[in-house]
Amino acid sequence: MNDEQRTPESAGLPTGFERGTDGPKVIVVGVDGSESSWRAASYAAGLARRQHALLALVYVQPILAGSAALGAPVSDVTEEVAEELLGEIRATTERLRDVYSIRWEFHTFRGDPFSGLVRAADDLKADAVVVGASERAGHRIVGSVAVRLVKAGRWPVTVVP
Image (cartoon, rainbow, N blue to C red; front, top):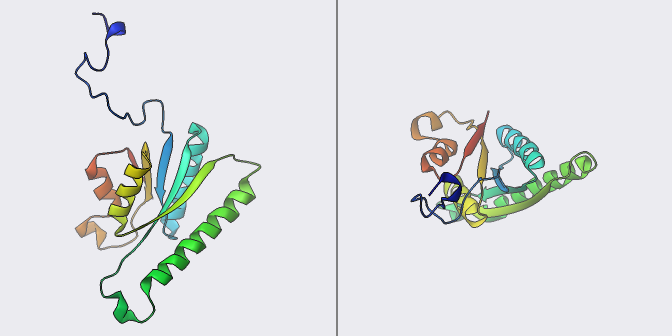
């Protein structure tokens, strides 16, 4: 059998869902309102435009232990953050609509950022994940979301400084 006639099965390769074989079709980007997440969103938007891919902007609403003791429900605050992020995204895409044509969706998930982004990437069948570099000093010791996503090894991950 020559190379042109070989199938993935005959080559011993998996035949399940293939990611990124013709370029990404779904790009997940984590946004949380930080400067690095907005840079990541801008980078991912450019990639989505060039690849004609769907841009899935994902905000993971944190669940804090003992949030009832803090007075105001944390879920109300994180819902407000999600609404503000969506408002900023809509305003930006409206302003740039004539220049760039990008298909995009906004999703929110609850939990820690790593687990939320993993769930989003799995649910949306992401071909690529883009995140901003961590701005917290402690992540150099414990490991940032970006490092954990790279170590998961399930998608190409781009970390934007």
